[in-house]
Length: 194
Ligand code: URA
Image (cartoon, rainbow, N blue to C red; front, side, top):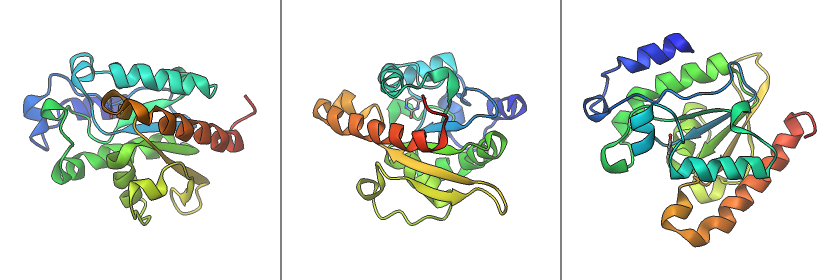
């Protein structure tokens, strides 16, 4: 994983490399049982090189602790490893050039559950595993079992709302909390009792 982070650091495969301050490869235990994937680094992440350390990160830490998880026990990353200017949604080509890094991270971590936060991360991961993605609303809060590789153990993909949703839509807090409560229930099926 460290070698991969070095590779990401020098990547210039898409134009996001031209405007980034730092790359944000992700962090957490290696291997790890639960992996969380967001959309892309924001301002604070770009400055520090660490994932989810801004406002969305504070919300995420609370949501995780509410379901008995600490940040230290999950691996957190995003679909693109460089900040899109003005926090715009990463484009198709940017996602396509960055997705091999995410794919390798999944291989290295061999998690039992991947939590995709928001539409962008969910659509990208569903495409990676060739799962139908009718719309984010239809898949959020549900668990999708997939086989990472032939003969590998089954892994769950669990899409939830992105924690940043409540920074621009405060009433969405209840659906965000509902998704994480649901997530907590799914994780009980794969983790030792909390
Ligand atoms: N949002 C993301 O999707 N990723 C981060 O690292 C921070 C905010």
